[in-house]
Structures are given as C-alpha cells and as structure tokens.
Length: 88
Image 1: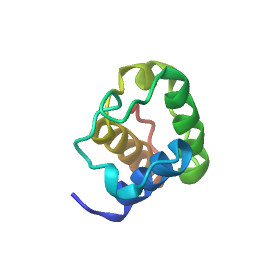
Image 2: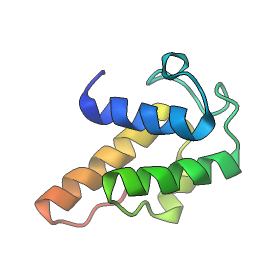
Image 3: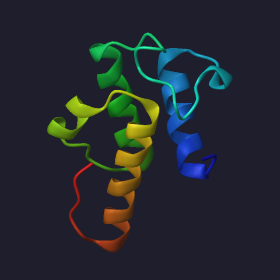
C-alpha cells in the first residue's frame, strides 16, 4: 500500500516525530515507533492541517498504528470530497 495518501500520512508522522521516513511502514505500530499519547496528539493536529479534516477525539483514541491512521484519514478525506459525514 504505497499510494499517495499513505505516503503523506507517513511523511507527517516522520516530520512530527523527527524520524526517518524509511523507518515507518504501513504496519508500524505507535509502540514500535515509541509514539506516546502526547506525540499522537501532535500527529493528529498535523494530519488535520495537512488534509484539512477534523479527526474526532473518540476515533483518535482508538488509533494504535500507522495503518489505522491512514484508514481513518482516508475515510475523512473521502467523506469530505463527497460531502457526506463520516467517522474515522
């Protein structure tokens, strides 16, 4: 899964956490990357800015890895494009 949206999410995670992009894969968990809840909040804010979406707090609490983050952002971006409400 190396589509553009996935790569953008991974780049945001890498930039906010000062990690090399190569270290992050779609299957990386936040635990693998030593990302704690405060780091997670920084990533969420950066993703909201990058994609111009609003990530609901309830959904954010459930995210434990890169794949879940990509899937959630993808749902929000698609919903925004179609004009329908969606939850991450």
